[in-house]
Length: 91
Image 1 (cartoon, helix red, strand yellow):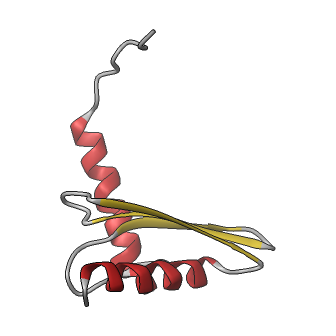
Image 2: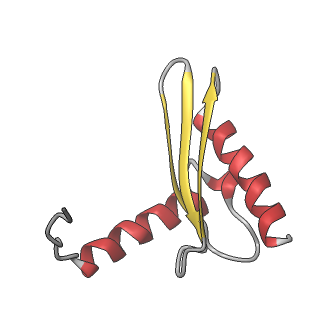
């Protein structure tokens, strides 16, 4: 059984996308950025673990990535993602 479709608020999704891009371009996730395209993502962490959830390119996604680090920081998780995206996109 397929659940009923839920209408998507495209204006709200665009606001969220812009916030995720800003987190990478100007915020705590800057280490995940690439020169070839926008990465959209967000870090999260507590005293012991870190998480970075992202996708790229932000305008037309072709890949998503989740980095979880035990005993790491959000910045370190973004750095891991940045290395991956730079290798994936070739720059």
